[in-house]
Length: 136
Image 1 (cartoon, one colour):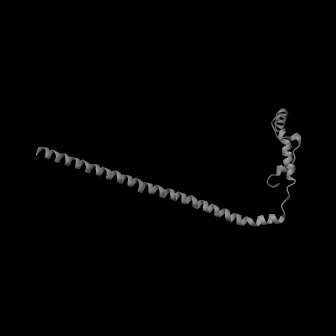
Image 2 (tube, helix red, strand yellow):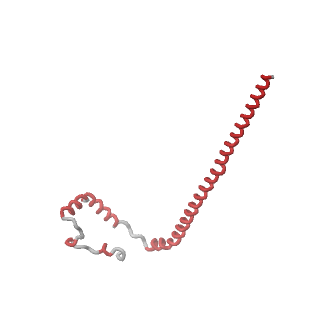
Image 3 (cartoon, one colour):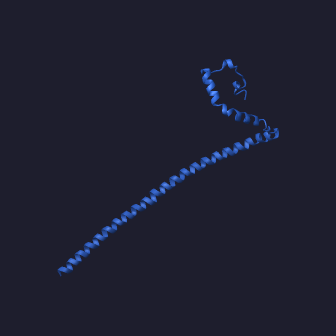
């Protein structure tokens, strides 16, 4: 931790505070947060009660890391497969809709148009027959 955050472990003297605020502004910030100081202190002292895990447990966790990495890779591959399957399913559903549903609708519309034409011819023939019967 010291290698990553060296400034964490260096104490700064109060005379060298890196701030551009005046003393009254700093005081107001501190007083605004004063109510959280006891709970923060309590939480920090409760950390001391947490036992440090044994070296064996830490070693077991470290040994599990390659297996965890394999499982993560497997999960990522499965997620990619699922995404590909979702895309293929969407394409199949879209094709089914375009080919089957829309073409079926078009076929029904064409059939309905033909039926209307036949009905018109039948009506005309019936009208012609009626007119012939009336004349004769």
